[in-house]
Amino acid sequence: MVRLSAVGVVAAAALLAACTAPLQPDGDRTPTASPTPTPPPVYRAELQLPEVPATVIEGADPATLATGVSAALFASAPVAVVASAVDSEAYLRAASAAVALGAPLLLRDPSTDVTEPSAGATAGTTEPAADPATDPAAAAPTDVTADELSRLGVLAVLVFGDVEVPVDPSVTVVQAPAEDADLAALLGLDLARQVVEPTGDVTGPTIAVAGLDRESPVLLATGPATPAATPAATPAATPIATPIATPIATPAAPTEGADAGVSAGETGRPAGDATPAPTESPAPPALPLTELAETPDGGLVLTTGDPTELAAVATARAAGLDVIVVSSGDPRVDPADIQAIAAVQPTATIGIGSGFGVSDTLAWKVATAATGVELPGGGQILFPGRRMVALYGTPAFPGLGILGEQDPAASVARVQGLAAEYQALTPDTVVGAFEIIVTIASAGPGEDGNYSNELPAETFIPWVEAARDAGVYVVLDLQPGRTDFLTQAKLYEPLLLYPNVGLALDPEWRLGPDQVHLVQIGSVDVSEVNAVGDYLAELTRTNHLPQKLLVLHQFMPRMIQGRENVNTTHQELAVLIHADGQGSQGGKNGTWQALHVGEPPGVVWGWKNFIDEDVPMLTPAQTYQVQPIPSFVSYQ
Image 1 (cartoon, rainbow, N blue to C red):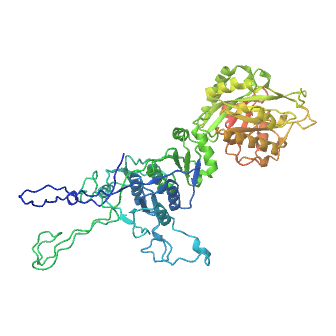
Image 2: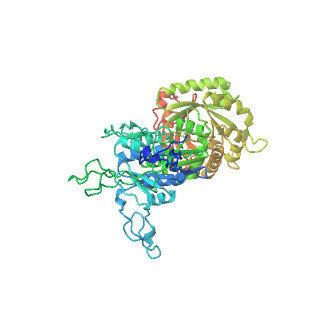
């Protein structure tokens, strides 16, 4: 659909004046064709998308963010909108106009205004341009708005607020009218006023701009409309514009003198009247006729909703791109964001602001969100907002924990009932979980000599899939004996590729070359733990999986040597230290407190209730009185 927008309405009759045919010798008049006026040209912006999967636009100020998004999405534009960076009402009106016109919105601080840049002066300044070769400071500050207007090749600029725009003299500058009706007529559009209600949330205006639709434009404002003095004289649906290269002429003033007669522009007073005849006011300069550019497929823009991102968001909506407000800066957090991204299936995503991290990180996070696959309990990030209650053990071996006391379906029902008891105690979402021992410490060396029985991965698929279908999480527990954790973890990669499966390392059962189980308590060096974390993070990232849980079991400080250096920076993982000591509650609490000394930054905590060994075992309410409240509680 082509929608024309322009200003400078002129009378159709002036363009279509009739021409009288000359007389022929027989007295008849031979009809001749009336001259056909040349229609004004129609302009359209040229849109583009970045060639990489994700781009983060950073900037210390709103003007830099605005120009960054403009440069990323607009190869050229016939019209740009510029607003005062310090006028909030002008901001909203400008955003509305930019989206309606399909034009980029740029910002300018009035403190940088100039009246006329002198020859040899840098744009946006009044000082002569310095030589960068002799003055290092000469290359420092640049006028990003002026530079972007030049790059866009604009023919006209629509200005909101009290701000000067340094552009080439050939560029038409139009000051936006203050009245709503006049602005609607200027744009050639029917703009309903939409008030942005104050809510105390500073992100409100930016979110409102993110909701603008260039196909159904509205005028955002912070208060009720001020009635216009006079309505627009010409219907907005049929604008006729003068091309911007030829300004609309001002009618000539009446000629003085007795025999001058009545001149054009005169109101009919006789020539020589003592009272000067009024003249018409000059018509405003005209914007070119424009139509909306076709939006490129696969583009998506993310914003945190911060007020500094408002103009950049308007530019994205002017280009017709979907804009999703991701307040956390991580598109994997909110289920609504995940499903919105999955619906777009973006090939090029722009994140506005430093809250989205670096471009490569945003790329894999968006790719993960685009799968639409969520964790049990929703979203693709484990904590905060979620807690887990788990049955511990392994199928067919009841002596190793209560998980082996029933089949998968009965285990699902049992853990969900237990999780429901905890759900009544917290506003967080409580998710049932299975912690399945997949490699079991053995008294003898076995055929491979590693004192660990590696159970076949395929035997656990029914458990993993039953849990997945029921919204239950699964943690695979490793007791590696004399081999290393990474070697064993890779054996279960087919299971780790399920979105609801994480990994637990049990250093109690990690033996040295000459150690045996139940004679020594095992331990692991932090370098081995981090090697597993690196592997699991890469597996998660490259396969676009939701965040995975990495559990580290511990009940003595020496079990994880160098624990303070555990790598917790992988955003693909949530690292949890699981205090799994047993015995009296006084002893367990002492262990809990001791383990928190020197804890690595960013870890969450787990607690184990031993049904037969704890004296007494804590109830769910008592378990949640432990501080900090455990994020993961298991039962053995």
